[in-house]
Image 1: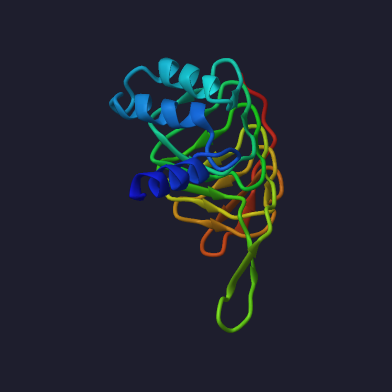
Image 2 (image 1 turned 60 degrees about the vertical axis):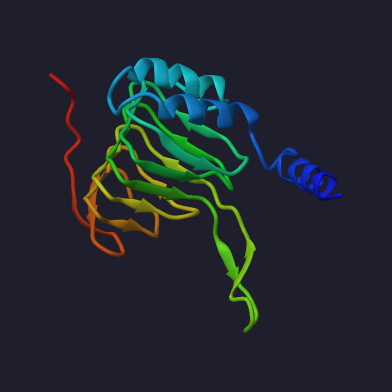
Length: 186
């Protein structure tokens, strides 16, 4: 009897869309690779798991990902780890993005519930990180935010509102402290 209950519980827990089987396998394999060793192999494995990753982009360690929506990373981007990514909604990173280590990127937003359960229903909101964005170490990006192309987010910042292109934002919550010049590479 206990065995049947256990099998029924496992069947419920492992039924899609809750579990992305390829991602589970990839997470196990990636765990075996030391940080910064074989970043191209790690990137190929994440592609196999369904993450859309453009050419020239690398994942430097194990991503902590959950949720059923899509993660898209453009060309020539680097995601340092550890990095926690909530895919309750879609996340789109442009080309040439650099994500610093210990980043948290979360598309899950909870409604405020009643007195007995304030963490109400999840309302997913997409995140867009524009081309050329650089986020420092320990940055948190919350649901529904767009970071404009060429922006820089200072280490430890918490991005709760849209950040305009070519600006520097720092602090908790992140505030724009200056604009950056538009320059072309030499």
